[in-house]
Length: 115
Length: 105
Image 1: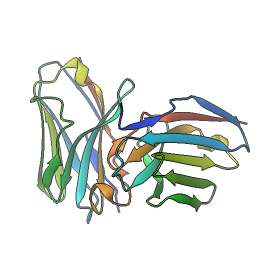
Image 2: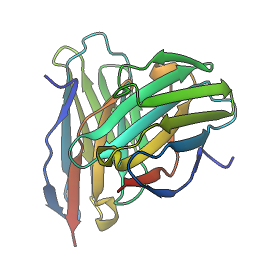
Image 3: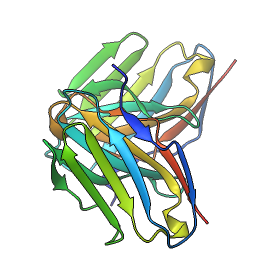
């Protein structure tokens, strides 16, 4: 299995631009999570999907952030417009059995820099 | 109060010693507890999970859970320099800030 695949690995964009991060979960995993990691705030949950349905989006910072999961093999996280404070590493993770499953497999992450 | 709290460290132990990492959580209804290891510049990787009170051993790693005290710990026996990393405690989908461990040769 190729694991959780995220793209792009690195993204540098100017403030105000739209950014789209992509994730392909492990086949057969029914839960998908988007996290953001910074030195100051650690690993923060942004949104959790189960069977392609958003279950918990309480961590989405504001209306500038949106996430979709149109099918079991693809999810996007969009930031529009982007701001310098959005600079972070964004991780996608997937698991079997929901949030209480057998642990999560993380992708390699997308390092986002907004200048 | 944070949902998952860890001593931020850093923690430094000599090679061959036991490293002890601790974590407390606030949600008494939590059923699943995880430890992840994250090397610098890499993504977190799962090393242990525990669901029941008591100890769970896997090689050099032992996870301990005490639901009454809302406390989870990870012991690493015979620590090796390759164990140097940040260890993240997770309760369901919430993560602690992590404890940076350095094992000195």
